[in-house]
Length: 159
Image (cartoon, rainbow, N blue to C red):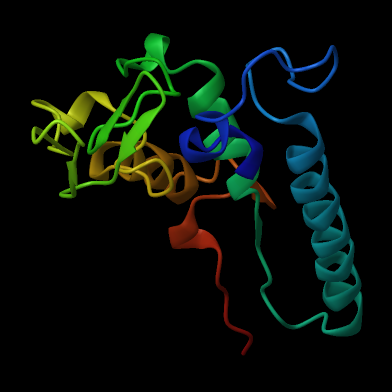
């Protein structure tokens, strides 16, 4: 869900009605990602027909990530828009590990948060290890797969 990336949402102020979805993500960007996934899944279905002896599993990464983003607090994470590493306040953005020299001679740095395990976004674009672990555990158990089977059962051999 590229429309949910905190780096995308940093600069959005006073969006027009319908610009954001009910979870605060840029609707048009997510619509594009979902359309791509619809077409990909359609191709996978065609491949299954064309290659009946192949084991092809479609995994909906979008649904997994959007599920985490839309219910971040219920899964033990802070608000999904928050970024762990960097400084992003009052219109000032300093990337992870960066330093910004201000005209008055002071500096603003972009440090890491104290507890990355509670954040979904590491730097506004990339997911934290904890978020990736949450997503991977659901992918491994087949929650977002078609067919909905654990990854350990996704392959088969013919004799």
